[in-house]
Image 1 (tube, helix red, strand yellow):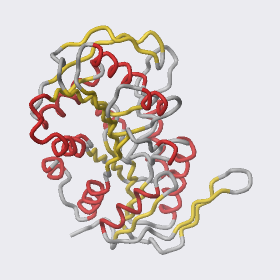
Image 2 (cartoon, helix red, strand yellow; image 1 turned 90 degrees about the vertical axis):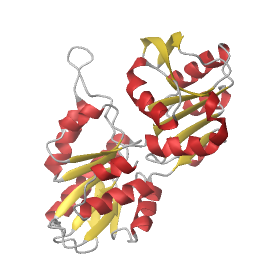
Image 3 (cartoon, helix red, strand yellow; image 1 turned 60 degrees about the horizontal axis):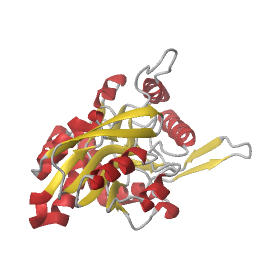
Image 4 (cartoon, one colour; image 1 turned 90 degrees about the horizontal axis):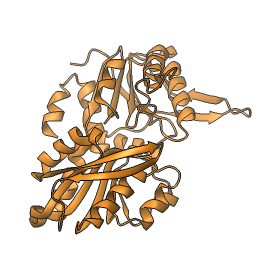
Length: 320
């Protein structure tokens, strides 16, 4: 029995409406009646046009580009629903912005990821549901329950189906030392060997490949990361792998930020295909032939139903 709300309601901001509608369809519910607009001076205006008193409410909103607008939109939605006496409010954030600002890299740096976690709590969120935080230890930044879904199994199933009988010549490659743990888990799902690229980064968004650890000659290589932003790391890694004799190079990530020169870099790179999940909406100008988008709607829909029904989320991880 559910003790947190008499019924379930889904609301969405403007960041990824397409995914929100897909999740709602999987659950078999309409999105809540709300309007998210702006006043003439740019301030965000929220109107909740249905009763939410006592309801278990889920707000689907990625804090992707424009990050600050989407974050404030989410915070105001939470506040509006809290003041309307919602029974419980869950912030469903397929992509959690500011996650890369998780520590002080140099003197007087902010820890913005912790600030955002505090803002969500202060606004009135009772729990958070997200996918593939940049660093899993960010879960400790929250003083409310957080459920952390994994995108890797969705991508792994795609490659298993794509290669089928050709898995013998597949190698999973970590593009840097920081991604080794993620890449190792991905390699275990594919039952494939692991290679590692050791690189030096002289300045932001510029990387120099130094050494490749592992056998990739004549292999189909799959580069694994959580985020592809400007695509500099992935494209440099793909070029290095091809230079030493890789047969084909693929790349995959959970969050396709794809900012700045990313699309042009991918288009002209030796990458055969780039697989991303739709945690971030992919605008038309970024939908090039090399990029394949897979849906996370099934996973989020099941997680939302489990949270509403007070069923273990860890069981969902086991199924993945």
